[in-house]
Each structure stands twice: as structure tokens, then as C-alpha cells.
Amino acid sequence: MTASPIWHPFTQHGRGEPIPQVARAEGAILHTADGRRIVDAISSWWVTTHGHCHPRIMAAIAEQAGKLDQIIFAGWTHEPAEAVARGLRQLMPDELTRVFFSDSGSTSVEVALKMALGFWANTERSRHKILVLEHAYHGDTVGAMSVGARGVFNAAYSPLLFDVETLPFPHGDGAATLEKLTALCRDEPAALIVEPLICGAGGMKIYDAAILADMRRICSAHEVLFIADEVMTGWGRTGTLLACEQAGIVPDILCLSKGLTGGAVPLAVTMATEAIFAAHLSQDRARMFFHSSSYTANPLACAAAAANIAIWQEEPVLERIARLAENQARLLEKLAHNPRVRNARRAGTITAFEIEDQRGGYLSDLGPRLLSRFREADLLLRPLGNTVYTMPPYCISDEDLALIYDGIAETVAHC
Image 1 (cartoon, rainbow, N blue to C red):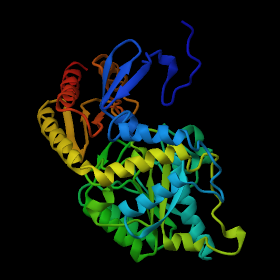
Image 2 (cartoon, rainbow, N blue to C red; image 1 turned 120 degrees about the vertical axis):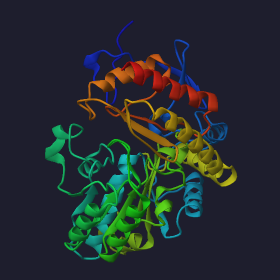
Image 3 (cartoon, rainbow, N blue to C red; image 1 turned 45 degrees about the vertical axis):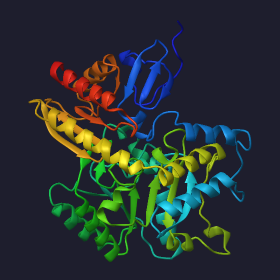
Image 4 (cartoon, helix red, strand yellow; image 1 turned 180 degrees about the horizontal axis):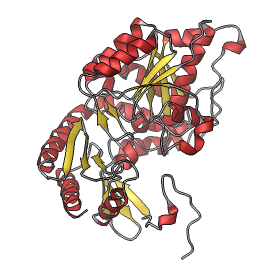
């Protein structure tokens, strides 16, 4: 068989590791071309919420495909995009009045950063510095890499990255984080960007909602724009529609993607307050917001997103999430008794822990061994170094959830 010419993301092809071919999927289950049944324990990289090939979402895409496939969105519109915007205005905080479409989590962050800098430029106040959290990850485009943690992910591209000010991760009561944020805010930065409650790719590191609320309060007191990157945490992952809800806060700018379409097709939005929009509103064309892509608000993707929003509005999604979170908590507690498991933790439907490992970190030698064993156990799990996490679709059965934790326990015992 001829080797595939595909260059896969986050894959070191020099290791020659197998790359299974998935033929179809339904609910929380993937079926490979060679007949294996794989339990999707990470929602296919955190995107699949209601389950693979959800009937309502698939039907919406199919119906839209017979009407309108693509149209330029600069100066034109279409009903699926309008439906998504209306639905988001109903679901999301009232203060977030404007919806800007893009294509992925990374681009939603790029848009947010440009909105923040454009706001200050158009109000003729010179603010440029961006504040970030230690261990942050916001994507792999240049701006998103710049506001993420520096390390092996982006070392080769460091000449492209702009300077930021980094706050320490908010351990415990977050005193050191809040103290440094207060000090940096006196220098009038443009914005702070955070992943609310949990830093995902940085190791599923969880912090308290009260600290998130305090960060928002400090930013507001100093007129620093607050950007919430809810690309991963949004759409119920932490137990509420948005993680920000648990802190009782509303950001100035909100980034959404992944679960926006239920995970079916790529789409993202960046929502902003009216003040952000108004700063770009003028008869002067030079003050417009200069950002787009060819597939902005693609009608097929918007049809999927509109169907997802309808599911949230019409079905008991939060009840499903609460039940999954309860089951996850029970299974994680049992797993936490394993002597090799460290720092077992949970945020809503996300669980994580570290396996005792001398090297640790993303390039831990343990990581590839874990990945191989999980693959052999018919589980889609992708450890972050020696950090193992789960984030299954909300539809997963109790039996398949138990398979995940049994497989993890067996793997931990033999790695």
C-alpha cells in the first residue's frame, strides 16, 4: 500500500506510529476502516458536544446544501448567518451585542486581539500591550501563539511573535496573579486574554471562579478590555453554557468555536460589546474593521450552528451535562486512589490527572506510550505529556464511559 502523502498536525511522522483510518461515527463512537469500535473520550479534540452525526445537525447541513453553499460575506448576508446571530444574542449575555464570524478558534482569537487594538486606535488612546496567563494556549496562528505560553510549541517561530506581559497561573487564592495584574494595569495595557477556569492545552490546569471574577473586576477598574477565550470551555464543557457564568462576569470580547456547530463543521464567532463595535463605526472607511476570510459565515457551517443553537434552546442539554459530570466525578474518585495518579481534578465534564513521571511535561517519554496503549484499548485519548484527561460527548452511555475509565486504569497500571 502506498504511503499517504498527508502531513498530520501535531504528529512526528519520523516515529512511524500507526494512524488509524476512521470510516464513520455515531454518538460517542468511531468506527475504523478495519472494523474497530473506538470510544471517543475527548470529543475529537474537544469539538463534538451532542455526539457525532447528530441527526438535527446533519439534516440542517443537508437541507442547506441544496439552497446555498457559499457567498462572500463582505457586504452580503444570508439567513443561516442571521439565524446564528439571533440565536447567539438570545443565549449569550445581553452586553455582547455584536457577532463577527470567522473559521476557527485561532482566528476568533486573532479577531478579538484586532478588535481590542482597533478599539484603542479608533478612540485615539495609545494602548498596545496584551496581558496573558501563564500556561495559556489560544491557537497556532501568529497572534494566537503570541498570547500563548512560549515553549516547544512555538520556539521555531519566535521571531514572528509579539511581546506580551505574563501573569503567573492563579494557584490557590490567586494572590500573586491578582497582585501582578493590578500592577500591570497601572501601565494601561490594551487587554487581558484568559481561558476561563481552565487552561486546556497547557495541562488542563484549573483555577477558582472567584479569581476569574477578581481579574475581571481589576480590568474593569482600569479600563482594560477583558477577552474570554471560551473556544474550549464554552458550550457546556465546565458545567455551564459559558465558564464565565460561574464567576458571574461578562467579558468585553468573547471567543467561541469548537462546539458552536456541535463539532460538525468549522465555524467561529467573536462577540463584542456595543462600545467595541461603536469604536469602528464611522463614515470614514479607514476606521472599518479590517478582517475577513474567504469562507466567513459559510452557509453550510451556519446551518449547523443554527441547529446546534436550537438544540440548546429546545432540549435539556444542561441536564445531560450535569448527569455526565456526576458520573465523571464518581469514576474519577475511584481512579484517584491509584498510587500513580496525581492531582485528580474536574471542571464540569472535563477530568484530568497526572501520572507520576520523572520527566513530565508535553515531551514526556510517557506520552507516546500512553497514546499507543489507549489506541490498542480502542479509546481515543490524547494525553498532554503525562497529563491524562477526558472530555467525552454529552451523549456518551454509562457503559462506554466506564470503558474509558477501565481502560485508563489498566493503562496506568502498565505504563
